[in-house]
Image (cartoon, rainbow, N blue to C red; front, top):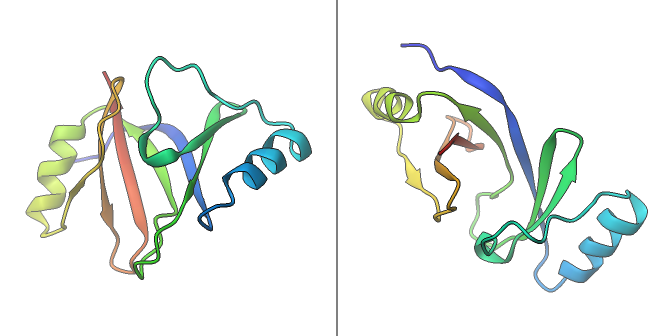
Length: 121
């Protein structure tokens, strides 16, 4: 089975709790990125989203739980098939919070890196 990667959808970077306004100021006023505010749905887990060319940059305060939540997210065409293939290899899948315009899940590679896969609906 082949994963049909379409594109890099977003990258998520993490910040310390309580630094959201500082991050918003840096990414908006220093880097000049437009913040995505009116998407028609609330952003999950207090995230702040920015448009960066043809991908998005997601910023979120990180919980201290050992493994980082930082990750790239790749859009694919065949999410259900990919999930079955990964589970067939014994890879644990984590269902992510719901976002109305996409299905998604994440997993960790053998080195602890988080990878998110999404399919637009």
